[in-house]
Length: 199
Length: 316
Image 1: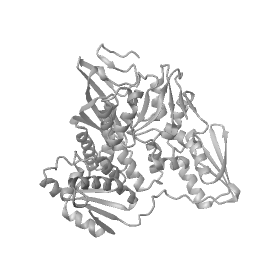
Image 2: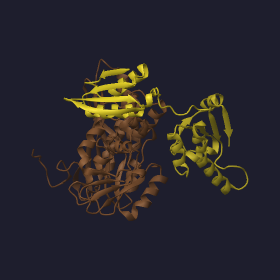
Image 3: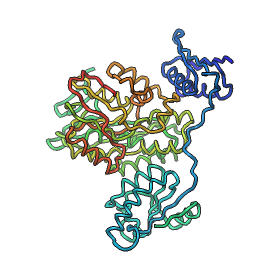
Image 4: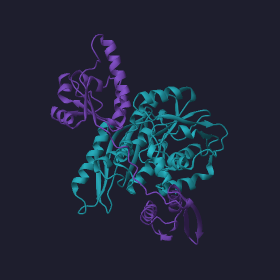
């Protein structure tokens, strides 16, 4: 089937979107897209190639013709929105201390730092990271794990820090990462999470 | 056109740099800059943050400290609810707070299309002004944010970007260049600029123009937003990237091994992009390390200044 569409007068990304719509609806074997600017020509070429077409271009006066032929007769695959993997579960990690385990305090701090640095290995399933009691000290300006927490936060993990606790230790002004939170939020998060891990 | 000038102008209109610099006395110079644009994200609060971070960036790129700012607003009164403007300005103020900048005024006009930005004034020592020039042979180049915001924004316009990608790129554009500017002040830095509409290559071209130097880029080192590559392959590339390429094609040489989509990314116009820091070779590793450990995770050495490079950019 031969199909021709006119995308003259359209600015990017409109020509690509029209081409995408046509390929999805009609799955043509041969397709010609007429555009009137260099950027649209380049972008439509890239898109058709990405969809498995063999592409050639020609100049027609001040316009360009981008012609595609579905390679090996294969139908072009419909375009999917690039979605990240579906989350399998939502994990909430509660950090109630700045030391991991009991015994030696220096060792406990080292372990806690190492724990927080390694948390990212949970990948997209790590949903919320909540700091309460002495744990809030990991989120203030002296903490050595700030870059790690910021990275988690930028990666989409919700970092929550207990406001009452910050207030108790007089650290409200010194918190640099995470969102100040309250007990209602924490309880609600526990209810929504698939798994709550307590440290 | 002849522009009036005087002896206290350190950086003026005669050289296209990030901001103007005016000497007040031997210890103090003023940095002045202004920037505003139409919305690039749907959320007004985040648009305010991005516009403010983008305007403040020019002061950081000169090595200075921003001090005061004024709002610039164009608003379609009657067509848009005034609460939107309030959210935009709240976003802007949030960024100004983070930068330690005070809002001292502003001006708004009725406009067919919404626009927001800032005029910013900063301080710097007159001897410590960093411009785009003054590259030295062997210097290393550090880039502090990944490339690809123009391509991702085009994909967002096309409705194919996922909410997670939109959120990530929004946060990236809203991130201040304050931290890298503070950190680089402790190292032997020869030149600096921020990456905006001309793309990485466009800004590198400005740096080597009228010099004897060239630039060699290690393409595999250049940080990019992961999704930008797929969007580029799908043809979601802003027209500005093609214009940038056309404008600087004669100054650029790509090794055959450099993928076409990576080439696209090097010309991609950035919104509120990172700093491009030209630092002495002896300091570059230490600066890169301090940036990485102090919250500027994406910072990486991407290339070097080469002698007798004939104003060219070689991409390997």
